[in-house]
Length: 364
Image (cartoon, rainbow, N blue to C red; front, top):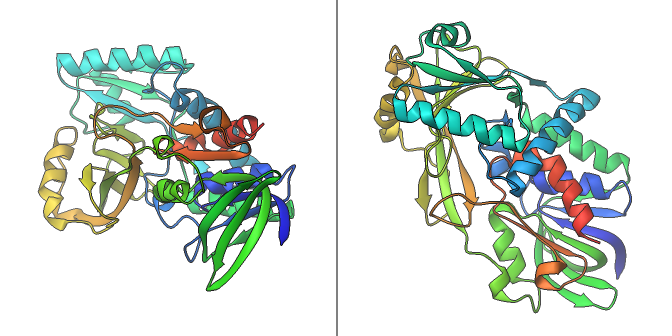
C-alpha cells in the first residue's frame, strides 16, 4: 500500500490552496472526482476579492477574509495572477439603507477594515456615474481576480513542491488506523488504497457526502447541506461602470450587484434560489426580476443588452440567517489528523490562502 503524508479531497480553490500549503512541508496528494479542477463553486462566482465588510465579529469569515485578502494580493503579485484593486461602491437611497451603510462601516472597522469612505451623492457620481443613490460607501481594497489563473498558480506551487494532483478520482471511504487513515479511491475505474497521516475533506458541495464515507464519524458532526443557486446575467454593450456597485446586502447574499471582469465585461448577480439538486441552468425568464433589481441603482439600463450567462451554487448549511465557515478538527470530532471543511461559500475565494493556513494550524 502506498504511503504518504497528506490526502486532500476536492480540487476547488479551497482544496488547491490547502494542498499547496501542505506541500511545503508534507508529501501531498490532491484528488478530484471531476475531469478538471474548479468545476463547481470555484469557477462559478463573481471573482471578487472581498474587503471583509459584513461578517460577524470574531467569525471565521471575518478573520480569514481580512487575512486572506492580503495573502491573496501578495500571492497574485508573486505568481503574476491577473487581478486588479478595482474598488466598489455600496449604494443607499432610503434612510433605512443609509443606516445599513453606517452599520456595515462600523462592523468593517471592528473587523479591521479601516479604509472605507462615505460618499455624498456628488461623490458617488465620480465613482459610479448614472447611479441612483443618495449616499454611498467606497471600499478601495475590494478587487477582482482571474480565478482560473489563480487556481493554476496553486497547482503550479503544488507540483513545484513535488505534490501530486490526480483528477477523475473518486473518494470511496476512509478508515482510522493507529498511524492515520487508509483511504479507498477509484481512479478512473481502478480501485486502490493509500495510507496517509492527514486527511483533509475540502469537497465543497460534496463535503457532507465525503464525511459520511469516513468510517465511524458520527452523523451529528455532519451539518445539513442546502444548495443555494445564484444566477448571473451579462450586459453586452457600453456601460458607465469602472468599479463594482453593490446594493445593501440581502438575507442570503450581497444582492444582485454589478461586477466587472478583467476585460471590463459587465455582469449582474447573483440572485438566490434554494434548490434540491445540482442544477446550473439559468432561467432566462428571471431576466425581468434582474432588470427591476438593477434599475433600483442603474435606472438607465438598456434591458435589450442583458442576457442570461451562468449560475453557481453555494454550499449553505442553513436556510435561515447568516452562516460561518466550519473548519472541523479533532477538537470537535475526535479524529486526529482529519479536517472537514463545511459551508465554505463567499468569501471563500478571498479567504482561501488563510483557510489553508488555518487548516495547517488546526491539524496539529
